[in-house]
Length: 185
Image (cartoon, rainbow, N blue to C red; front, side, top):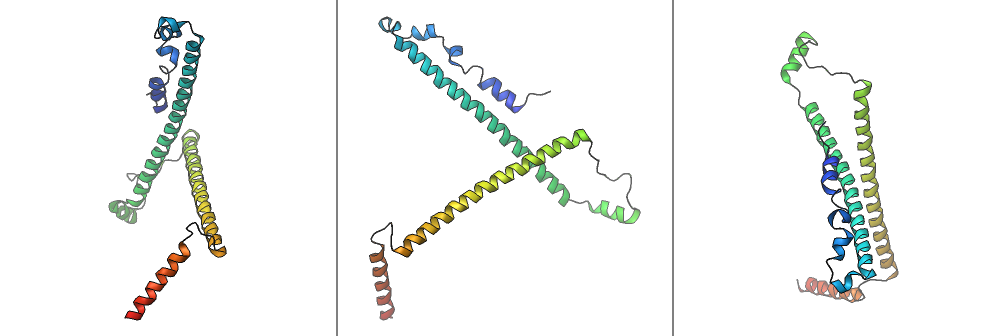
C-alpha cells in the first residue's frame, strides 16, 4: 500500500525533531566555555530548549493532522465536483438509443453498493456534513458578532454617544455647506 500523506509528513518531520536526536546534553554542554560547562544553568537551558522543541514538535503533529483533514476535504470536494459534472454531462447518443431501443446492455449502468463499498462513502458524506455544519456555525458566529456591533453602534447613535466626539460638528458643517450650495443654484 502506498504511503499516505500523514505517514510521509510524520516520517520526515517528526522523528528527527526531538532535541536529543539533534544534540545531546554532553555535546550541548561542550558548546559553552569551560568555566560555564559545569553550571547548573547550562543543564536548565538544555531542558528549556528541549521543552520548547517538544512544544514545536507537538504543534507540527497537530498541523499534520489538520493538513490531512484539509487534504481529505479537498479530495471530497473534487469527487463531488466530478459527480456533479458527470450528472450534467449526458450523452445525447445514449438518450436517443434509450428512447429507441430501451435500456441496452452496452449502456453504462450504475453498480449497486456493497456493505464494504458503502461505508467509506457514508463516512465521507458524514465528514462533508460535519464540515458544512462547522463552516455554517463559523459563519453564523461572524454574522452574530457583526449584528451585535451594529446594534451597539445604533445604541450609541440613539443616546448620542459617538466614538468621534466631533461628529456632531462635522455633520452640521456638512449640512450648512449643502444648504449653501442649494441656495446658490
